[in-house]
Amino acid sequence: MNKKKRSPIICRCNNITLETIQQAFVDGCDTLDKLFDATTAGVGPCGGSCRKVTGPILEYYLKHKTFPPAPPKQPKK
Image (cartoon, rainbow, N blue to C red; front, side, top):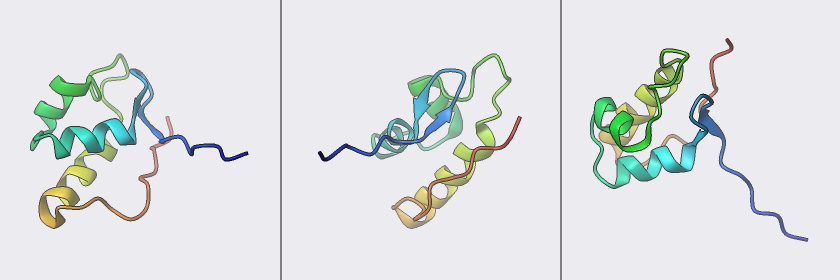
């Protein structure tokens, strides 16, 4: 049986996946504020701990027009 690999959760408060975040960047979110508005990542009750992950993804994408080869590691709470 072939199971589809699930995209890692980046924003745990709002259950936003890496795939959703990457698609938002592809769709034109070129700042973190635009990402937060488009996906609700980074605006949860924790105060935005996932911003430590989404920021570097955005920077890499804007510089290379592709995503980092390794999935980002979520900071421990």
